Amino acid sequence: MGAGQAERLISVGEISRHHSLGDLWLVVDGVVYDLSQFAAEHPGGAGVLLQHAGSDATAAYSEVHSPSLIKTSLPASSRIGVLDQTTVTEEWARPPPQAHGSPRKTLEKPPLESIINARDFGIAAEASFSPKAWAFLSSAATDCLTKERNGSVYSEIILRPRVLRDVRNVDISTTILGHRIKAPIFCAPTSMGRIFHPEGERELGRGCQRMGIPQCVSTSCSYPLPEVMDAVEGEGQMMASDGEAGVVPVFFQLYVDKDRTKSERLLEMVRKRGVKAVFLTIDAPVIGKREADERVKSDESLSAPMSGAQAKNDKKGGSLGRLMGNFIDASLTWDDVAWLRKHAPGLPVVLKGIQTAMDTVKAMEVGVDAIYLTNHGGRSLDTAPATILVLLELQKCCPQVFDRMEVYIDGGITRGTDIFKALCLGARAVGIGRGFLFSLNYGKEGVEHFVNILADELVTTMQMCGITSLDQVHPGLLHTGAIDHLVPSSEEHPYAKWKPKSRSSRL
Image 1: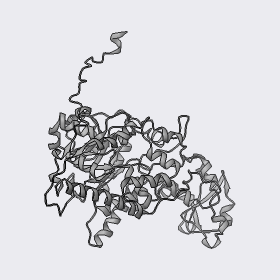
Image 2: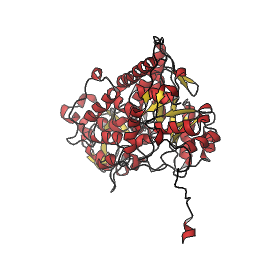
Image 3: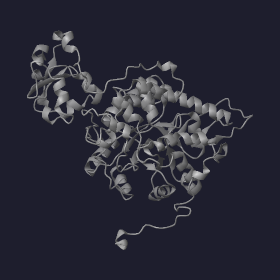
Image 4: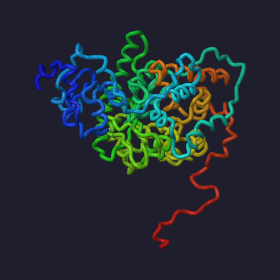
């Protein structure tokens, strides 16, 4: 196809005549595509394409796909011209009567300036996110007990304030894997950001750059990594031109694919784009049962460009996590840390999903750079321990690990006091997932406001406890007696001592 043909102006009248399965044209971002050969193979089904056949599908496309996907996944011959804007009528531009995705709720989100704490963002999101977006983000495994305990256990830890200290000037900056950051907070890896904001993880990255904190990009990101990095680097360059700090580090979370060659290619791209560390997820060899997400049908046009996963619905329900997580390799073992180092040479390795002291010691022995205490926000295994209890378990059973590697934690963190408590117990920084996606409801300005709220609360907590920098935190500023009985002392059960036997010995 020649350049002249590619730029052929095509009228609305001509486009409208091609509206059947075997003769299907549509418009995305002003470009006219012939999808006749592709419609039957569309991963989201031909129905959504037929709904927009002969019309402008830009809005529907942009809700679930990155801008580059249609340009890179279709043959050049599919692009047949550009829309003649002079022929567009009000009737033709009107969207189809039935939108394919879940409708937004009728309540409007409150103005950003009315939000005064991190939980307010969740209330606004519940009112304004689509039913599917809310179900996907708010859901957790089975009875959601771990999700609730992640947050509630923090309230059982008592602060021990110190007084008559000079606390006029407070510094909450720290380092993570050698990189200086403005606050001990990072954006945890999250999936499918575009169902919460059109710019998804790109906008999250911009907000994190503005606040001087890292973003960890997920394998299940709704944009390809290069597009996220372009947004992050662009924001950093704008800040540098205004005399502000340069680009803050970006990390990458890896779900290992059953086809290892796909993960190896992904890691090669991660290195080329300047990512500063790989966070290997180890707490989700399979996807937990998230019932609220199962109950709401998925938009089958949703896809994750880096994993290649495609949303669908089946007899079990429509959970995005379960249906889009089938590519994950459940055979991953400790031996695969060496495989990761081989294919990500020079990059720090962080194990994401440690939940016991025993596995923490093993991580130290295999020589990873950091561990990440997380239970996937309660989304993997219900009744797994709250993450702050795991941090206490490390202090009780293997305190030596804090001198050998950095420790991060997430789960249920909604207050500056929560962050302070985690830091006092040895965490270098805290990750937050849901909260950042709630704040994404307001774009990068929402992300900035969210981080500012938590940073302000952290500063106040430090001042009330008599310290002015993070190198002064220590466990003596806390009383954990109300939860100490929940912290294991060893790998063994305190009194049930039997060991598993092979099935063959009982037959």
